[in-house]
Image (cartoon, rainbow, N blue to C red; front, side):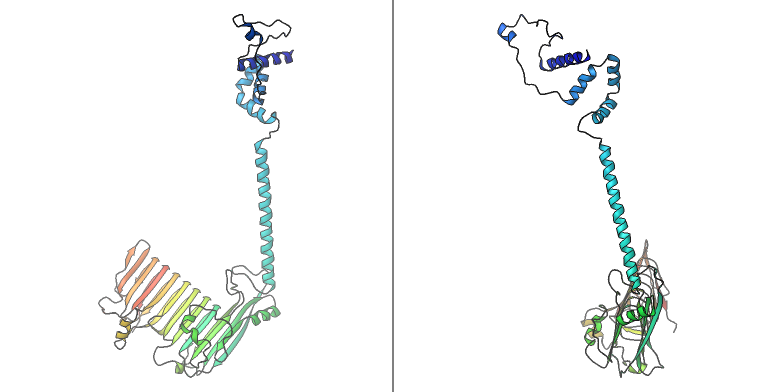
Length: 431
């Protein structure tokens, strides 16, 4: 009975959609004809090739064939009913949230596998690095390594010295003029982290300290900034220059091994120094402190991480002292051009004394009669001075451009002191 009612309802729906007169439910009953139509049109009812009903149409017919109580309840929950019916009873379709869950689960598994592989690779890399007696910067030694040192010393026979160059990637550098010394000497101290004495000896063999004289420099110079000053003297074979070149494995690159280093100490007797401050000094150390005492001349000092200290020195025009992270301390004299070479200085390009730090402080101790034009600036910090020049402040910035000592005119040189993040201090030397 229900099937017959559903078929009759479908016939009525098709007739209503296509303007076809509905049939009677009893197929044996005589068909009612419209007397107003001609016989040929009445008898020849057109048959249309209608497309089959869609799934939604079939469901609509099914609901309308239900008893009124169920039908109205279905219409009241039409949205909920349609959503549930669309996924549960529509053939060939599945719930979308199942696909989302599987995709998220797959992505999570792949991410976990990649993280585990990276951690395992890092552990293997660190283990191999420590097994070779080396370590990683900022990472504690996992193999219980110890510190081993190996000192070396060499006496240099020089009657006079005009050029000095020291290149060291990792380690402290000290240049000292000793009144008690009679000959120039170079001392090196190799420092390594190794698990045993045998591993330390292997590392020592790969670290080289070349000196010329008495030998020759076979490896490429490990410094680029200072070599511009005395690059021609590295293999010139002259007897008035001294070059020290240090080569350390894993001492350069993106992750330099700072656990291994070489400290250099150069001692010069006063008798071999030139009578005029014409000596050219080039020093570079990427990681380490630089200390210069009693050396005068044209200084080109470059550091990356470490402090630079210059005391009892007379530096010439064109000197450059620069470091990335660290402090600069200077206590000496600035050799401005005098009347004898004032004409030559005016003919050449303007020259200056340059001190710069990216992150750190600069302390300058100068004679109170120093006649230079001061160009000083800090982007984030303060400037303090007992010289009577006005300091301009703007937010975190502080600067000044003018005579170091107000009232002095005709300054032949410029002192440039620049700090990106840090403080600058000027002090008058006690006479």
